[in-house]
Length: 461
Ligand code: ZN
Image (cartoon, rainbow, N blue to C red; front, top):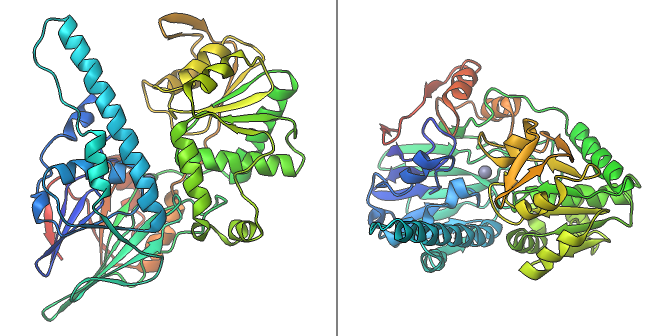
């Protein structure tokens, strides 16, 4: 049995690991590299293995950095079966379609630039909407948490709740090959146990080797309640003084989590009942519908709410604006509304229009609820710039800018350590983390052989 690493090796994106088990090639995740041009270009590189050899693709969850290269894998010859949880299957489909749509748009823009510059060479999209639809056809069986599934004689996989986003899983791969018996755990992304909605992560107990993420291997989250209190205080004061609250938001999980908190804020009297809330993102609207179809994915409180006929994401003043014309109409709202739109780091999408119409208003607020990478508009606002250029127009920043960093979907260093201690594996492969985070995390691990694989490296298990 052998394992090789083809992404998220000493980096946080592009998760992709290949296991050769008893002559059966099994791929764990096939994610996209994200964050800057150099990484974008790496997506088009060779996978480092032949996709047509791979028999199974097991997906831990539907984030782009875990499933974003699946259409490319299929385009390059993969004909195997894709196994996921039921929620991941639905979410991965919209994530891949959205990515394909963006790739097509980018290619069209490049072609226009090339034509204007008199250049012939154009870059084709990484994959198209058709490729993403084709990839969806390869999604095969879905599985629930904790039920072992036989992939081939002697090879079983069990999906365990990772508590990271709806449908997310850690995987336990059990392989009997001749006289040898190996049990390997794959963390996927491990959730932050402090958050509402989802259950706490289940460690891959019994594994003699684990492949684990280290995104926040050197960070500690503040208490969740402080983040929620800050959310309520910003929304309430802004609405009271007649402004709008603009929330740039990721379509998957973060948007639903904010809806959940707003609903609870209204129920507990901490937010005004008359407040209007707009979810202005077709993808977030589709994702919310999927969230409502999977009550099995939540913790006991939310599951009970569903059973009683409730909906954790429904608010009295909530409107979904799917059409562009509906989205444009929001520009006329001067105050009293919460507007949630993508993209999460305000690098594109509808939120830029809402920022254009609200940043100059001193009564408005912008609420940053997610990670803001260097160079993005969200980061500029976070850093306190006084002017920004949007759609060729210079706009003064008079609105209040607030950052809330307590909504992370990732386990922090203590939670990662607790996950590892519950398993106590002989061997630990650290992936999906920056070098500094991995190095620091590694100093806390005891009685295990630590490996930090490089891209393309393989190891006998
Ligand atoms: Zn993730």
